[in-house]
Image 1 (cartoon, rainbow, N blue to C red):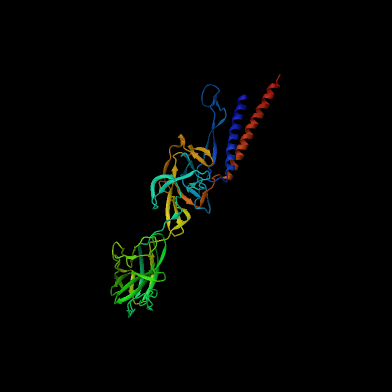
Image 2: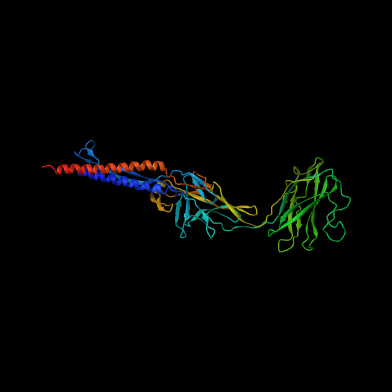
Amino acid sequence: MLTSMYTAVSGMNANGTSLSVISDNIANLNTVGFKSSRAEFGDVLSQSMTGIAGSSQIGRGVQVMGVSPLFTQGSFESTASGLDLAIDGDGFFMVNDAAGARYYTRAGQFSIDKSGNIVNLDDLALQGYLADAAGNITGTTGNLQVATRQSPANMTTTAQVALNLDATATIPAAAFTLDANGDGINNDPANFNSSTTVNVYDSQGGAHPVTLYFVKTAANTWNVHYVHDNPAVPGSLVDAGTQNLIFNADGSLNTDNSGAAISFNFGGAVTNPQPIGFNFGTGTAEAPAGTGLDMSTQFASAFSVLSLNQDGYASGSLKSLAVSESGVITGSFTNGQTRAIGQVALARFIAPTGLSKLGRNLYGEAFDSGQPVVGAANTSGIGKIASNSLELSNVDLAQEFVDMIAAQRGFQANSKIITTTDELMQTVLSLK
């Protein structure tokens, strides 16, 4: 008879443990990246009444076999921070402490610390593949860091020009000049058909407006004069050089002398002279020359500039960070440039339920989890990354309430067995 009491005690203990697990789940309902758990029961070794197994065995109660985390996918919450990251899949973020110890987490609340490291709420450094100075992702892993918040200037070396020159334009009566009024100061361009201006950049990122003056010199033939401010004589202009354009009878470009770069001298402590190749066709300064109808043409219509692009830019400061599905972190700068600064690495375990829970949303590698497989996001089924998002707790509150009621009734039922057994014992004691 006493056996029933001890069996009921095991039931109360087991259901009490289940209630503890349920309460922990509910307490972490709003914890980012939290994974709920469940208590798993098993029966205790049975006692045989006659020494024969099978129908003569009586169970001795219940025991908690384990508490298993449930790594089901949590829903996503949109945020305004580009470094709020969520994993859609089975992977884990890897974070290291200052001593190099590694931890794993699903909580993707990251920010930049004073040293430029990308860290979580515990100042643990996010791990990933590092980028070189040019923004190329390498195979080297380490602390992801915004090493610089500046984008260096880039000197203009080439420009691509697409326009139409008016085939009906007349040849100017006089030669092109920068001193039309004859006062000896080159600040009054004259004797040209059309013009357009583009900003080019020196080696320090300084912008210099260069005006292209187009002068028709013969049928289907034009000269382009490149004029900019004269650094030696303030308030005056200088013609840096001339380029020849020749068109075919159908208006297509025949040659633009792309191989001959124009040398500019902008003065100051910058690279001088600065050669810039202006390409009016599909050619480059290294492989002249552009031809055809795909860029510059000479048709019997008004002068028009379709595009005028050059490869230089000023220096800029970091404006924002964005993270792609594959985990590539790209910085956008105020000068319009973008550059990859690293790629988030993810870890996947064969048996994630075997991970050791360390608190603070962290897991540790354990014997039962196996060793991690590390790789880039969105590859090999490791999961992809959603930026401006956080993975919410996967706790199902409705299910927890159902489980709580079941555990409560189980506890009450087992306590009833104790009181009933007690009444039976009282009856036995009252016998005379």
